[in-house]
Amino acid sequence: MNRIKTLFATALVAVASASALAAPTDPAGFWTTPTIQGYGNMHYLPDSAFKPQPGHTYKVVFALTEAAPQPDKANPALDHVARTVNLYAASGVPLAKLKFVAVAYGAATPIALDDAHYRAAFGVPNPNLPLIAELTKAGVTIAVCGQAVAEHHFQYDWINRDVTLALSGLTTVTALQQQGYALMQL
Image (cartoon, rainbow, N blue to C red):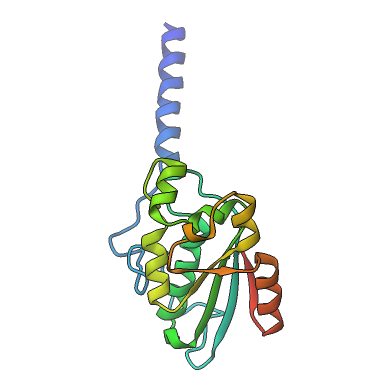
């Protein structure tokens, strides 16, 4: 009988532990995407510290170097660029005051492929293209390293029309830093 009680108690502890570890759910409307619709979830905190100031111009170069965990998912670093746009816009900074450039290189290079060549390489539509289109519409420049394109054995005419072909990721980052851009490594 003690053995049954012990097993029963162990099972109860396991169930209680699993319940305690279950992820809590956020209330409806907690996460929003005010500017880049459907991308870059953010939760705005109106009374938080270090908020962007609406009258300032912000210059950021985002270095995108990691691949998405799955080829059918948008690149998380590109989604973070969208989150950044959403956070600044929610803080009242006009899009015209955001000078954002996202340059993909290394493992992130395939995000720049047009849909036909992405499908040929990965067997699925390029999930980054709708996000790239939204970012471009918001004034963000999306670029790809020309050296990384060559290293991946992609042709330059395979790059999506919304993506700027840069000489390299290295020169893009350093040239923009010389112009006062802050580097955000993603």
